[in-house]
Length: 564
Image (cartoon, rainbow, N blue to C red; front, side, top):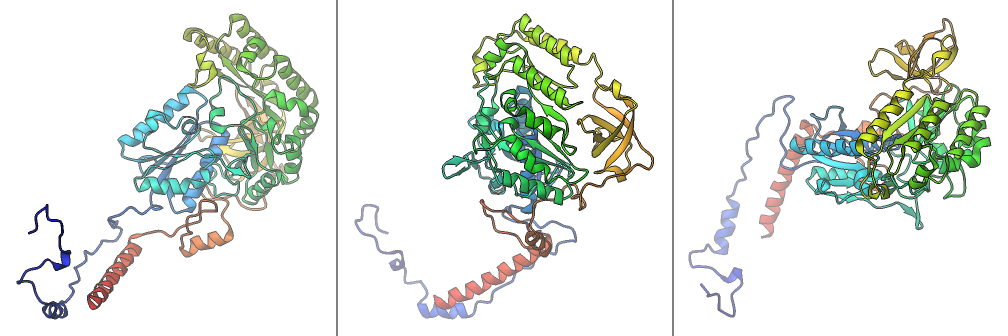
């Protein structure tokens, strides 16, 4: 053998011995070779075939969403795309191969639940994909290392991310969607979707906001205001009604700011939307901050009086102290909030105003808190969301001098006691109301309906009522609900011209893709287009695929031998 110091070494083909067979001997040996087919193991009926490689699109996925209706809509879109691409959606996390965790960054407890779910999934050897505002705002958090991330504007690429996660890869898509350099509202609205409730469509009209509240972490994730064009939103509503939806929720971080970035406004959108609402269907407006709704009070009152729009508005005040509001950078004073409430109450009789209050914001004094207490006493809000302040990492409020924890807890407790001291619906007992039935109660004993003012009315669980508008007599009231008895022989309005989709059924698929699903084809992956349906890789098809590969290998072997 040549030494390691030799300057030259022969080609490997030139290194041989006298005992090697000649080329003629090799050729003769090839002719006497008979390929042997390995005996295949017969699989019993129902037995799963063990494959050597992972095939994306055949796994079970569990989706868990925390937070607002905007986040819930994103979760529905991601579930729809995964199901349309062949993944099997499950409500049982134990059965799932993949956990898709869609997070909320508003409060510490929500992020704690999110973090604990990641840990639990890893302990059970589940594949984990994370989405939502937490990883978008803080993708470098230690507990997110090695995980695949879907940004809030990248939900249309969820299939690609899950495919890679299933194969053991880590993918992070956190970019913003832009059109000619201008930030867009987000993913397309016509993507496949699995509605948690087939009767309710949640439409995000814009993402982000124009404010810079000192306590808000969501701004870090959702960014500045970016609105969808009116025509796209109207088309989405039209498609939803055609799929049997009877109630639409408009959502965003601030619906009142809608359109300011694209030269339009919220009333212009709403007037176009109400043209599309069929008889017996309803539209619910989402949260709006006081500064932007002030400009449109006259038009908003007219819209809220429309018979197919709920007379309901969620306007967060957060505090009745102007000093606290200034520290929060809320860009309004308490008188602005009072003006909104007083005007709408005078122009929209019976309107429901919901609001939010933060207890124990940094610098809040006892006098500041008492101003908030007096505001609640005056308006006796039927829907009040009381939140103890939690400093969110990276926000200006987290660096301010904090109110002692015990004081925050005491103020939260005091305000909660005030809220529970009055019953807002007692005076409605004996009324006859029209209500739209859309849900089932948590205890599964009643159906949940809402009247014109979006007040909750429990009605008997009669299947014929689901998705219909019925007439009831109110005979009992509680803190958060009324109970209604159906009026005998009253007209039942069936809102939609088509039957609602079944629970778990994918919406937004074209007829061509539906036909493809039925015929057993899988659409190619395309990150910019609709990711279609799939054929199921059951054991019989895998068996045929294996036989085909074996035959192909034999052919390649003989061709190779003939050539060489």
